[in-house]
Image (cartoon, rainbow, N blue to C red; front, side, top):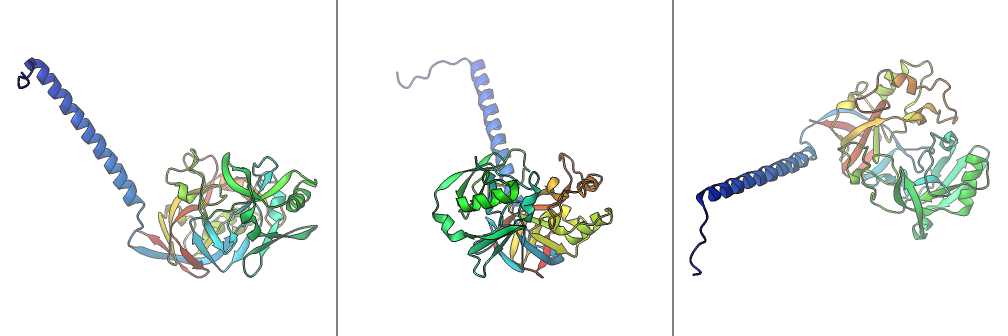
Length: 335
């Protein structure tokens, strides 16, 4: 009995065969498409083999505190967490409200007047601001402080509080109050935030840096700033756009079309154009906002991109090969 097959009508056999065939084709198509997408994404993220020189590094900047002053350097290490020299790291500190939500120079322009500096060993930070006594931040000690709640663009981040003394100093300068603001520190060596939904599709979690808005590196060219200045009554400097890299040599806005960038032995992926907010309307030397809303007003006349609500200036980059760069290094574009 066990060897007798059940009777199945021929028309049912045909129907089942059609279903199995269709299912097999569907699975093969889905698998093939998934493999295609995987391979396309893989090769799209592989650095090219050929490069052409387009210019050289003119300036390098690190911004230890989000929305505060820059430190100009002649060389720096470029890592997955962002630019750094020892404990001098890019966007590794930020000012928050007492509930942990960060504030920036869009709302509090005086933040731009807080000027950090580091000692020769890049282990101790000192803050200066108009009308305020200098105050020291022992950065090494912050690694052993218990974490507190903090947020960047609604995303929770690991942070440690710098001290009551620094909280009072920041609050007095920015708010003219004894409290209300805190200074917090990011103690990790790797990015931990996922990509926000509204950010560019090419951005990956490894590109988000420490406490950065989008990516851990931003590049701008001297020619792009020069092109803008020819349209303005009052010229601006590259510093008003807060770049890490300033490149001389390429024509205005050539960086828009760069896909891969090589500086020294480091390699970067152009993730997205840098869309600009109202911080660029604040003079970083005076902390005063432009009454004419410049240069934002002029940029809106010729630097808008499809799908973006604000003009773009410069490029946001994610690092793919880490290393050290210095002023004067050649800048290459892959092709």
